[in-house]
Image (cartoon, rainbow over all chains, first blue to last red; front, side, top):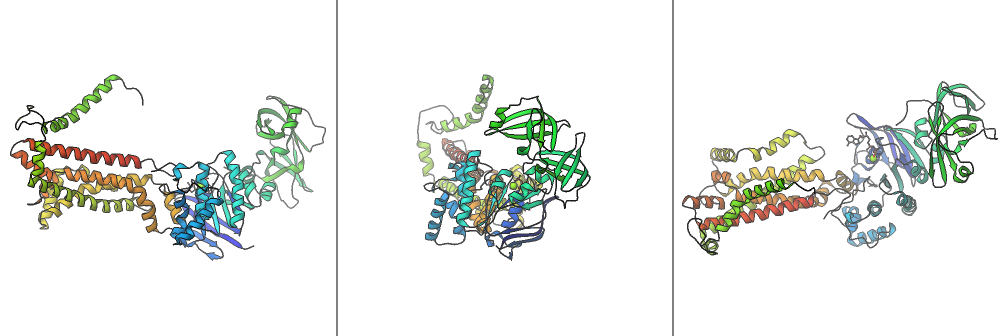
Length: 366
Length: 266
Ligand SMILES: Nc1ncnc2c1ncn2[C@@H]1O[C@H](COP(=O)(O)OP(=O)(O)OP(=O)(O)O)[C@@H](O)[C@H]1O
Ligand SMILES: [Mg+2]
């Protein structure tokens, strides 16, 4: 595999704000690469730098082994789907999609063929004559996709392409995006702040915060081995407990949380952790029950049920630990119905040492 | 719309009456058969017929239309250019630029007229069509710039970005995105400028020369020799034409107002 897009120590400031701060990335041909981060973390700025709409203050942008840092947008084999689509309101669907080919001076007959092929691909046949204002959100989204893809870009940049859609449409379009990528065989770089979307769609993910890259890796890597509590929190690892390491040997750490009984967490033998740490446990790995389970779990903490939420096939218990922290426990619906818990009830939270993560403490993210 | 207390309705009715009664009376009198005074002597079209026969008035009409057309056209070209220049991302967006641009609209017109005349005399410019056109552009330009800038601010910068991303050069962006989206505002500004130019008296009075009489100047000279029904008829025509132009201008600007990336646009 060869590199499709590279960023080399790129810096971009907007006034006093470092929107992108020393970012280096290498994205491979044909990859579905997601950039995940909270609002204002610099995701859109990175896309604009790759598209050539902004120039970096320092550093280089490389596309297909060519340094394009100073090239204008029309000299780059890249197209972008904008955050709110930015369809031209005075042009019809057909004219919107044809715009890029028109700019390249393609022959009319070729344009017609390419546009109708692309409209078929995004399932918009028969709507050629409509104006963008006469389309639904999902249709506008697909016009935006078609308008970018019809130019056969080597790299497609997508800025929160699904953010404006409702839940069901979003799930449909997620499948659609994957299908389109397989068909056009381009590199997709997709910005999102939805962690589940990124985990589901991507070959690799970059997690950003405050203009900096926190971690780059496959969804599995990021999910299983987040490098910091900021990354962990961002991919849905919400249960955290801060404490101090008491001992650490044989791949097992003993952490003393502030004011609670010690907990055991497995760690890699190479980690040299000490001092203040954060212990994190996945909500679906926490066992919650009204009395001590027969299983000899490694860890057990007392808590009180704070809130019960049903979400389709599972129940989410929000429980308050003795220290005041709120944890979540996801329990399959059948299991929850077998022994229901009510708000205010005293419960035990139990989990295995290998289901926890221990990470160095740092200033809280977001 | 909330229901208004009836006293407010009364006040607004009175204000409307105050504003439009003179115009209505003027139009009414233009159909009066009486040659003198305001006493009603029956309905007639004869003053309009007389108007249509009057060579001097026809000439003044042609002068007015030509001057309004040229000054508005030039003001549009320069004004749209200036507005786009001021509103680009690296353009000057300072408050004082606005102030300077708007100044000609608030300076007393008589000062504008006198100072223009002084400049023309100093530079030994022959007074005539050219000087009137320049004079009218002094107020037509700021008007155009204000209207076009207001519209430009409503354009989503993402439209330009996506056009550039799709391979458009600055020229393509201007001709295919910016100008088409400005079209209703350009029409609106043009109609408004045309009307203002058509109706202008003060500036024209100072910078006109012999042989370049416009309609308002003609009306003024006719009134000096006595208020005839012919003047009423002429004034009525001017009022109606102006109101139609301004109404159309307003309509076009309203229609162009609610366009942003998601919403519909016609
Ligand atoms: N044109 C601009 N002028 C000034 N500051 C800007 C500009 N564009 C972005 N910024 C700032 O740069 C930072 C990063 O912005 P960016 O748009 O890249 O964030 P983002 O990750 O895309 O956020 P979101 O998820 O809200 O779209 C923000 O702090 C923002 O305020
Ligand atoms: Mg953004």
